Image 1: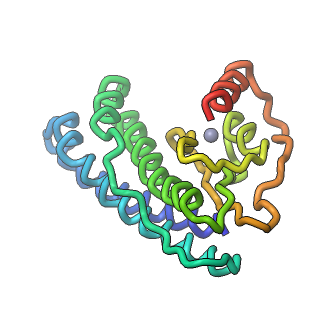
Image 2: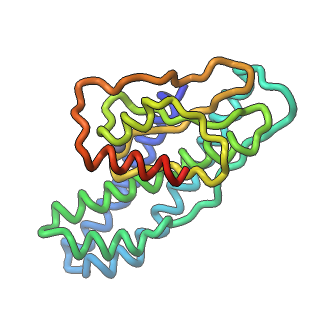
Length: 210
Ligand SMILES: [Zn+2]
């Protein structure tokens, strides 16, 4: 289920990384990193974001068919958007202490933005589709404490206002809870990870606002 979508998202991130390596070569040849990134990054995010959204919409339709959901519904990808690529560039350029750090901050931010197109396509269709009760958060089995605590609640989000909390390099995805069927994510106790007060506070804050 969500695993195939995760693997496809990872391939898109690898393709985006190849585009970025061209950009880093320009920088190595003397181009200003900030200028090159401001010029090229928004388009890279939009392009791979669009591909991610299209992929997620197709996945949604396949899942819907497998679930035997009633009624007619065709999933739509969310509109491609650079999702604040300029702020990512300004933040990364201001934070990175060397070229390697800059590359990894940018790639982390690009990964998050591509994956957000995939996740938000699943969440928005789960909310629009009457055959779906909503969506659930699924971790990749490697999640940070915050994500494990959130996913472990097994909540089904059904409000359009429930955004998908994510972070750079977050491997969490969204999956559909079909009406009249057992939910795909049962509540669980996150294993062996010690939650800090900061993690618990973030979870409380997320729950308060969703
Ligand atoms: Zn996480």
